[in-house]
Structure formats: structure tokens, C-alpha cells
Length: 202
Image 1 (cartoon, one colour):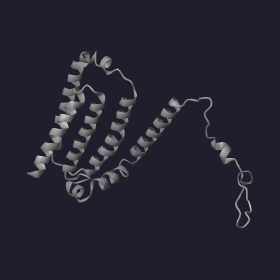
Image 2 (spheres, rainbow, N blue to C red):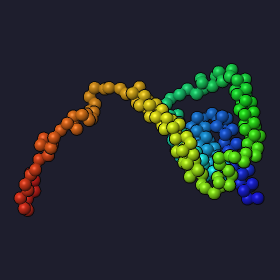
Image 3 (cartoon, rainbow, N blue to C red):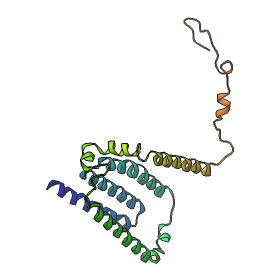
Image 4 (tube, one colour):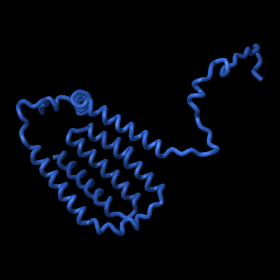
């Protein structure tokens, strides 16, 4: 009974905050409501016993994506009124995408109720005996190890590309030269000084 009440409580808060994201006019308030919706979704995953997914939502979405978006909205002078002028033109397309999304969610929930086959690799009993973090780590680093490493490589390439595209050389800025620093020897960088007893170094 308590779990059901908590489920409806967090679900109601998440739906209300999600509606507020697209209803409020202030973009900063919209991002704050989005962060609140993420917290409520994390609470729902905890009720489902998926604490690993809840932790990832809080760390990745709240701690990185939402905060980054909040700083971008606060620092950039964006004219949101002009951006919303032509929003009604895309309303039919948005409704179509929403209908397709709800149909996909319904089909996924419908077929997820099917009974697992007897020769399934992971049974429900084996899943409930281990934690989410242990099971996800075992699957990632065994069955999907190559895909996991490739995704990390793609993220590294994207990060390097973003740094190269935004790098600008400006005059009068002192920069670090790694090659020059590593090519120095000890005779030019270290000086051994004999300090007399009771006196300092002038």
C-alpha cells in the first residue's frame, strides 16, 4: 500500500513538472522543473528496484546535462520570444511524433509481459539475486564489451573534435609548451645551494 502511494505521488509530481517544462515562459524555471522531473523519475526507478538506473539519472542528467543547459540558458542572451513565434507551425508534426511515441511505449509494455523462454540466458531468479550495478557491469563487460569500448572511443573523438573546433589562438596569452618542458635537463633546471647553518638563502 505504501509503495503504491509513493508511486502515484512521484508520478504525479513528475507529470506536473514535465507539463511545467513546456508551459512556463521563463527558460530558467523550465530547466529547474526539468531537474525536478529527473529527480522524481529517479525515485520511481528506486521503487522498481533499479537503483543503478536511478543513480545514473541523477549523476548524468541532473549533474551534467541539466546543469550545463541551465548555465547555457543563463549566460546566453537568447530571444526565446522570437523562437516561439513559429512554434504553432510544427504543432501537427509534434502531435504525430507524440502519437508514434505512445504507440511504441504501449507495444513495448505489452510484449514485456510475455513469459521468458526456458532457455533464456538470464532468468528472473538470477537477476533478483544480484544487484543492478553487478548485473549491468557483467553484461557490459562480457556480452557487449566491444560495443562499450567503441562507444567510449566515439565519445573521445567527439570531445577532441569539439576542443579543436573551439580552439582559438590569441596574442598576448601565455601558453604551456609541453615539448620544451620535457626537453629540459636537470643541470639547467635544478641548482644545488649549500646553506650555512643558522643562515638563510639570500
